[in-house]
Amino acid sequence: MRGMLRENASHKSENGTKSWLIFYWSTFFGTRLKLHEKCEKGDCPVADELTSDQSRGKEVDGFVIHVRDPTGSPPVEYAPWILQTRENPIYPPVLKNAKFMSKFNLLKSYPFDSDFPDIF
Image (cartoon, rainbow, N blue to C red; front, side):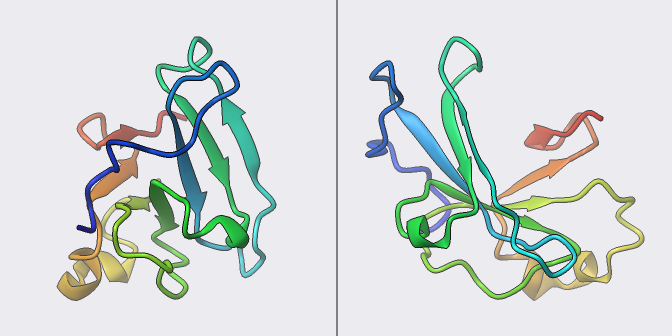
């Protein structure tokens, strides 16, 4: 079922705890970013890994899609889609598109009431 984090994530961090794999799906001004960052439990509230490696697309626990570059659709339906924006909701026209917005489960943005507040 799309939108639910897998309770038994198959990824393990270096210290053996469950690790979440998050895929940054969007490009940056048309260029795919080369992301590979890990955060171990103890350094972060939960162990996680951020990647843009398309070969790992079927392993992920969530997809981050930037509001200004919603290119294509992620390859799996089971993982939650996370919409990322730092812009005022008035500006990105896709935010008014109900069909587009219905694909997303979580929001990463600047308001403190978003699912993942992006404080910059």
